[in-house]
Image (cartoon, rainbow, N blue to C red; front, side):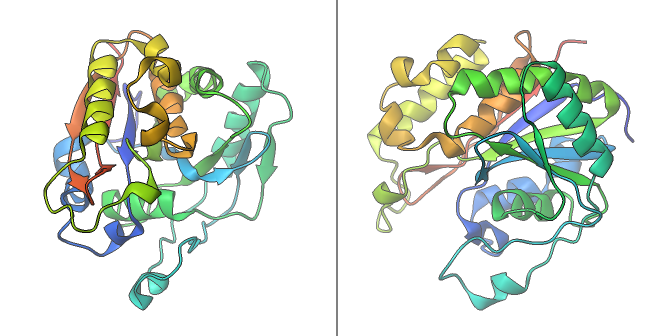
Amino acid sequence: MSAGRINETFYISHGSPLLAIDDSLPARHFLKSWTHQIFQQKPKSVLIISGHWETYEPTVNAVDRVDTIYDFYGFPHSMYKLKYPAPGAPELAKRVQELLTTSGFRHVKVDKKRGLDHGAWIPLMLMYPQANIPVCQLSLQMNKDATYHYNMGRALAPLKEEGVLIIGSGSATHNLRSLDRNAGDEVVPWAAEFDKWLEDALVSGRHEDVNNYLQKAPNAKKAHPSPDHFYPLHVALGAAGEDAKAELVHRSWSLGTFSYASYKFTVPS
């Protein structure tokens, strides 16, 4: 099924950069099954919001072909040879700038050099390995809150009508200091509690609670000491809209506290 109106947005947990090569990670197999089991429609282009691009003001990249950014250190050498040479989407970048500006987001910038960080290219390499779908990336603002990012998503909602697939890429829990390499299959209780709260809040449509997660969620600051891997969810959720139905499409764990929970948000027809 090719591009037309798209009724879904997604939030995917990309976890560790090892997702690129480690076949023992269930999340890798989930993403490799993307076009067969999760989302068969071929988008016109992809707008991705990753937890690894932070700017003071909203910024989109507009390039002819995206470079692969290796923004991780100390991993196997083979990972630094991987490439994801997808076409860029400068027209989409211009449209994102236009939609955000008309919705009150001032000083939206366009970066004509930046490629894709690993929070964008690693999942996309597994989801769309042919690298033939144009991609544009949008940055996060750590000086703003979750509601700001939700409203950013709301401003971008018209893109769905234009065949653009909007993906937030982060991690449902992201506390790198709490990772336990000896955890085996065990999940640390505080992480499981936050993860379950998030699923319940999303599935029951409690968007305000998700936007106010710091006050509403158990163990919020432990699950996300910094919100960079959580804000992509708020953008995807806002773009889906307040009537969207949320569905958990994948859950797995790594290192005791790393949740790969991923969600689909579907707009009612």
